[in-house]
Image (tube, rainbow, N blue to C red):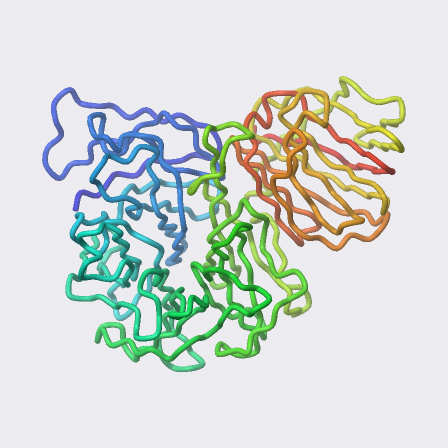
Length: 516
């Protein structure tokens, strides 16, 4: 295959020049990657990576991420979603980012191409990479919904490509796994393969349904992937009647401390990433009180460990049209969180990766440009009291990617938070709102509900928070416990502020940091 040269995605918005020859490139030579799209800590693939004349020379988005770690490098494979897809062409070929720190990224271009209209991988779905005796095995989903293909084949199947260097991948045309009897071959996808040391064998998790349309994670096992002999062991986890999830997509499994964790994303209206806990990899699986990693704008979360820390990464959905009232669409920007435990608790906590948190060294002075009569302002301290109306403080636009941090305490009857992208009126803005009486954090755009995550508030307790804004991705972390990702266009191009309603909210130690 033609392997695309690297383009350094230097942290935040650095344009990279990429010359284009006037004559066609030699066969086997990278046609060049455009520098027209700004990329940063929440990257998306560059446009122009196929060359100027190709129909796929278009804005691209990152879909489901398939991470693999080796020798200090995180290889973040993902489904490439091109904004313009030529008629008759396949889609969702697998591309790759590389990073060592989740701050600077290299975009590696395409790793595995989609097939023809007669191939099982006319479209590609999620998979995973494992290394066995010097060979890399990339198990992935083949998807073909063309009527001519469906006449004699399953819509979805599990396929395989191998490599010796993670750069040149060869599809193994004779390898295919389809849904066993009793399971639904229309939805049979997302193979996740790992070596289970406790069981002494390789495990493959597959997202599917029974013939009766009951969602489950199916387990296959093998003594050696090189034999192509995977045996069905039945369901590892099945959705309960209370959950009634349509699909348990992109399942992942790992051990942290004394516990095993199973993550999956529900293919339903809410579309969030859940997790379950067990004392063994076989279950039984318990549902924690707060069983989500993030809200409804972080999907298809999968994890990877460097042997010390574990990270979960998914995508924050774009909108079409690209406004705060546009429709939520597949694909967006890569977002990475760090997962950890407290005192060997079985609950998972979420925070920003350390390198990301420390990548904003320059602190700026904040000047209040407007405030309510019932707002008291000090040095990076703002006390807002509101009874029948709102209280607010307003600041000038930030103008570029930034980190906002501080503490917040909020009375039990109050709502309050941060407003962006709307000028000086919270009600006309995009609001990230804390609601102690509902134990929720919600996102509201111009009065319309957008997103939600549960959080157990205690009245008048002081909570630390960090808010990262990079391009149109905004990610909030509260107390290093929960993440809340959102898509907010023009987040730092207009005034922003802090607000309260129905009670008292105090913000302290508020500061804004830039990278330089």
